[in-house]
Length: 330
Image 1 (cartoon, rainbow, N blue to C red):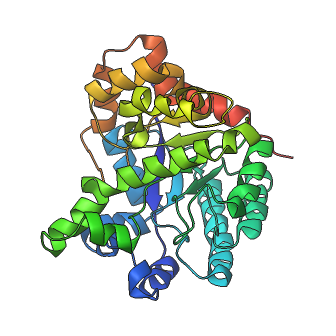
Image 2 (cartoon, rainbow, N blue to C red; image 1 turned 90 degrees about the vertical axis):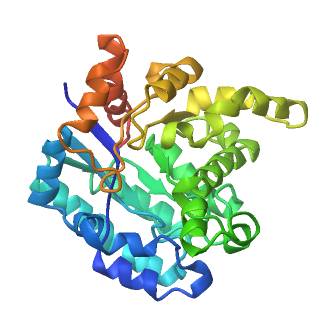
């Protein structure tokens, strides 16, 4: 069984330096995790050590992406410069090991027009398969009209956008995730809960702003079994009383959003995602290297999940391959 992972990260020294140079309010609280120990070493490696780890997990192919928070807190001119070099690096890595790697483009969302142009270059010239976004750009939410050129380009190319968590804005971290000590506060605001609420809200904002009514061909992917939203979709559908959307919120999820596990090997969550969205809306991801499960951990989850063989193959690789086949390269 072929297994393709869609949330598989790396970083470069240039990006680390750019993150460190940010003013303190916009410096990600999880920055230290990107540089030290085994995670730091694995993030930098795009060669044989990474391939060996993939083999150890039972993963056949990674769709590479720059790790969070991407370039979305940088100054526009710096973000534009970095996006091109990062995407060229991804493309070169794929050329060397096309049997093991694909890629999501990195976009300079501080300059949305430049980001849209780079998305087109990445898809039509470099062969990348969409892009990964990280929600907000500083304090500008993902649904902001400034970002619509990115959505328009993605929809026209039929290229998916993977929406990945980043930390909440400083004011939200201070208001909701502080008061329990630096280590606990940072964890609470990130992997403990803050990342997932933040990302779920950004996706809902896109729906409520009418992004998918304007661009019905736009396809999004998100991790962590839907970033909390799947578990409240019936409740959230109550918004239909006050919105002017074409469809209930849940229908946008079923027609425009796919989800992945991000290394959360939970059969309970898998069953719920299938019940809410159907197996055709579920893809696979391991969240490497943050969730590194050797001894075949990724493969073990899929092989032992209570799935029909057809659904197992669809989630492991088929749904992703169908989406990639629909991307327009010209």
